[in-house]
View 1 (cartoon, helix red, strand yellow):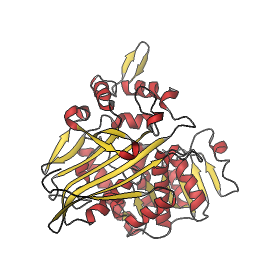
View 2 (cartoon, one colour):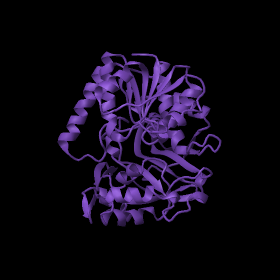
View 3 (tube, one colour):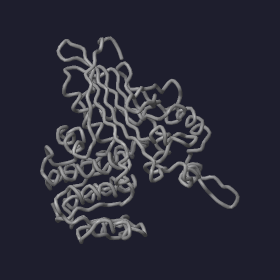
Length: 412
């Protein structure tokens, strides 16, 4: 490891939660926070003493990033998605471990050449990280992140798998779902909108099924889920590329049904199906009078500019991840459901989404500092020991529950 400080790149919603966790729970390493927000100094006044310092830097300049990382023992990268892969490449080059909640292969990328280049970059990052005895841990937040650790644990308990479904969501609790969309933004508005037109892949009858981005909200592609703890029926729609995780879970050629799903309150899918197919999330620029604006930029600005779509100080959200696996142990068919539901901490003010993403990244950094991960190199969350994450989350009041249920072995 290069230096001895903990470097937090980005002090938005998730970066701030990661910083708070490191300050209160990690070993007393110095913490350096990097952001360009004008109120950064004021926002850090809650952290007494000189342990937390801040810097403003141009993170598009590789030399500035290298200088910052050289002083760090572990980096937590909490920047917009476009920065993620480049930060990992610099960290591997410098020789400093890094944790991120982001994908390194853009889930909405369709160009074979771009996808191949990203995979080539990942191979180089892995080789470099192994040579320098460091860990690069991406996709380590809520979903992806906690769900993948839970999924690996569930899969390990079966001899054969028939069905693997995982679910993730962050939404206002029912009494605070008070606007026309019954949804409030606890992370990037633009990120939410882009995910709403992201192509998906699921497994049906052992075959990969492609769902175009403009069809993910169609009635034939959604199903419902009863979550007793939330007191609601949720709509579930395909969220990204489930086939991407076949190899990670060791399920290629071995699973008949598999999907990764996002969940929302009823009515969400019908509304956004119309919005997507009416062009409101298109990125091609249009001329409106003397201005040029893309529909998705307009939609993001409209939603983010209204208080009704943001959480007030007394409003709570809920975050959930759920893994539902059906298969056989020996000749006995069985079903295992692992689930975590968290709510906003009204004392600290951190939302459930901040806790499950920001805190999880900080737990990953602490695992690296303590030498608790199984190997160096580019790691998938499926390689993170379940017991470590379960204990770390439990210490923060986030409990993973488990149900062992009967299954007839004949279908879903």
